[in-house]
Every structure is written in C-alpha cells, then in structure tokens.
Amino acid sequence: MVVERVSFYVLLVLVTIAFVAVIMPFYSAIFWGLVLAILFFPLHVRIEQALKGRSNAAAALSVLVCLCLVIVPGLIILTLLVQQGNEVYQRINSGQIDIRQILTQMQQALPLFIQTRIDALELTGFQELQERFSGAVMSGGSFFAGRALSFGQNTVQFFIAFGVMLYLLFFLFRDGRSLARMIRRSTPLSSGHTSKFMAKFTSVVRATVRGNVIIAIIQGTIGGITFWALGVQPALLWGVVMSFLSLLPAVGAALIWVPTAIYLALAGFWIKAAILTAVGVLAIGLVDNLLRPPLVGKEVKLPDYVVLISTIGGISLIGINGFVIGPLIAALFISAWGVLTEERLAEKPLHDNQT
Image 1: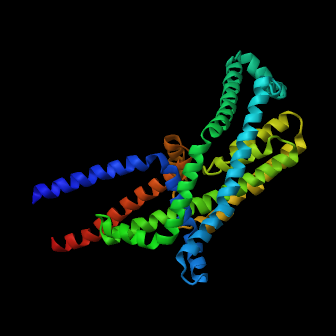
Image 2: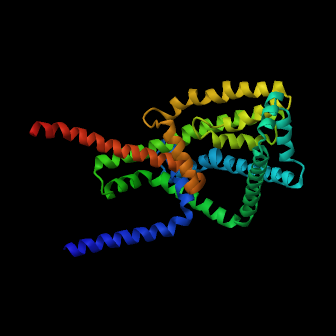
Image 3: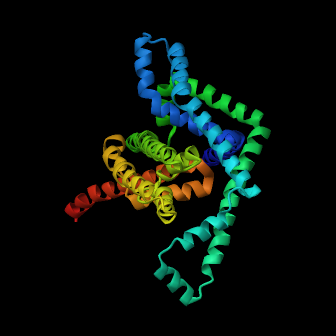
C-alpha cells in the first residue's frame, strides 16, 4: 500500500511538471487571462444577473468588455510607444539628436562657481558620464527598434497567444466558480488556509492592477499632457515611461520629470521648468497619496520598500509580468508567515496552560 501511494505521488508530480512545461510557452497569455478574469469578475456577475443566468452570453459579453476597456487601448498605446521609441532611436543614430552636445550645453549652463569647482578638481568623470549616458540612450533606442522588428516577425505567435488568452478568459468567466471550488477541494492545505490564500491572491491582484495601474496611468497621463503642453517631445513616450515608473513607490515618475525640469532650467526655460515642477509636486505627487488608500485598501497594504524591491525583482526576473507577480509573491509570503505566526500564538497559551 505504501509503495502504491508513493508511486501515485511520483506520477502526480511528473505529470504536473510535464503539464507545466506544455503550457509554459503561453504562460503570459494564461497569466493575464487569469488577471483579467479576477479583475472583471464582479462586473461579470452583474452581467450574468442582468441576462438571467445565461452563462455563455454573459461570458462572451464580459470578454467583449475587457477587449473594449483594456486590451484594445493597451495594444494601441503599446504600438504608438514602440513607434515613437524607434523614431527617437533613428534620430539619435542619424545625428539629429546629439546627446553629448546636450550634456555639454547642460554643463556650460551650470553656475560659474560649480564649473570652476569641477575644473579645479580636474575631474574626468563628466566625460565618462557623457559616454555612459549616450550609450544607455542608444541601447534603449535599439531596444525599441528591436521590439518593433520582432513584433513584425512574431505577429503569428502574438495572435495565437492573444487568441489563447481570450479563449481562456471566456471559460474563466463562465466556469470561474466551479474552478475555484475544484481548487479548494484539490489542494492539500486545510480549507481555512486555502480560503485565506485564495482571498489574498484575488485581493492582491485586484489591488495591484486596479489600484497601482490606475494610479500609474493617471500619473503618466498628467505627465504626458504636461510634456506635450510644454513642447517636450516625444510626449507620449515619456508619458508611458512615467506610467511604468509610477509602479515603483517613493521614486516613480519623478525619475523623468525631475531631470527634465532641471534640464529646462539649465537651458534657460525657467517658466517651463517652474510649471513642470509645480505639476510634478502638486499633481503627480499627490495622486498617489489621494487615490491609493481607496483603490488599494488597507488589507493588502505592503510596506513601500517591499513593493519596490519585489516589483524591481519581479521585472528583472520575468519581465513586464513581474510588476504584478513580484508584489503578489511578496504578499503571499507575508500572508503565509502571518498565518503561521497566528497559529503559533494561538497554540502558545494552550501549551502554557498545560504546563
């Protein structure tokens, strides 16, 4: 009996590993299908109630809502972003934008006492900084150019993954409740632990996407419109970059608008620099403090340093999906240790009474 049981568990592990390997090429499509299903499931419930329980029609309509509200606008913005990034790279590569000349002008625009101090120290670091910054800009531009080329080459693969995500999303809407019950029955954890982790999983996904992404989009939109109004181009590219950076607490969009304001001030555009600084501090900076509490909620609030490290680590490890997966893993880690701590504290008085 023991041998049969061990053999069954070995077989279970092997087929699970094989199944994961089979679906791994579409892990991004599966992951984002799951995220969209969790995010829009409350809306799907209302649609299903309005259609009087017709699950297939409700699931199809929920998928259409996701397409119109999230997927299509996201694809349009991503396409424009790649195009603008490629255009900037081409202008830098052709010499229309000279990064070294811009940095030299910024150095010359510094106050005289700072230039004198730099010359007195006989530093060669500024030249090295120019070379490294120029190389970084060229690398970023070549990345956008490479993304544009690879997107054209992998169009078929992209549409296959896109179709897999929509197909999975339909069944997650239609059969989401039964799938959740099946997971609860199948997991080796206790029903209490399973319920806690599933609740934490859904709450973190909703908080991360609904809260952090909405805040990031608002901050990036404010920054992009401000850049466009001030004549800082390409405004869409910088707005999207600020949106991505806004996912990082503490630093966020300031990594873009602060250096830009400094550059405008050194270039003599004092009014533009003052306007950008005012918008950055009063609008972009306050959005996070005003919107994060009602959107994210206190029950899934993670320390800023945990969010920062887990987000950067997730993006570094698995790419853009890491901005959700990183904080999710961190939240589940903290939740798991919190459950263990609660159980040990509950058992400790009983043990003390027995002794």
